[in-house]
Image (cartoon, rainbow, N blue to C red; front, side, top):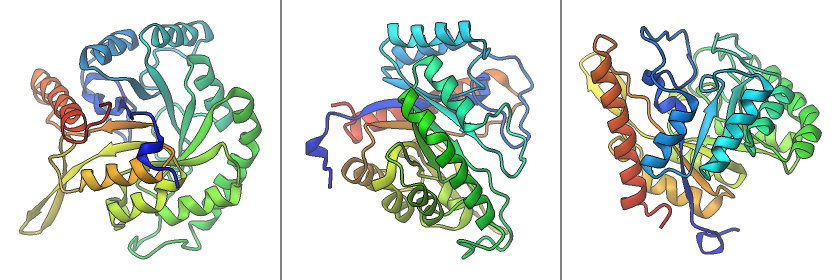
Length: 303
């Protein structure tokens, strides 16, 4: 098993969804921003340098065009700044309406055009209720099989482009289901993307999910949230990494020691009110900065 001592220092990246109030991120689950985009792709890259980041995990919500000439310009800008790029897309099997999406082969081509070395693939499966204990539900299996077949078909293109494929445990899938798909595909260019918070959506223990997925994981969404209890139940609220209720030190240790990941990609989703643009923008950026400080100073990432 690979250990931390066998590896180079972890790089620190940012999932661009963390800046969705800035218009840098996918409009997911029907969300609409009431103001214009606040920065260009190239301004985002400069912000990354100012924040001391090593790269970005981005989706087509960041790219202002899919024109080949523009994509080449984006790749060149990232290389000039020595930023790694990863590309995020979903199959949208449940028709959730999450923005421009691709076939996997199209996602690979976009990733290659901007110099990204990885494509994260989400399934967006419509799960039946009750979700708890519904691993491998008969209504879910056809979507897992469809994903397996699509990944198998796309694997040769991934090899040719030098772009690995990472299947995410999004809000729709248990870690064991993601692992089943990966093992069914059985290809070295097909692995996992760990999201540290998403297991909560389907009543799975986040740390157990991280431990399950880590040996298969090429990348991650390193996200923390807080559970706030209420008289009528509870609410999960976004926080900076290290300020929530997930044991992020344990999550990092599992990723660092068990997975082939060479990067940690911070993700935050703060859910600020849209009544005050400046307050939302400042709060979102503050959460990103706090998360970076936690990863650098407490976890020692990059040191």
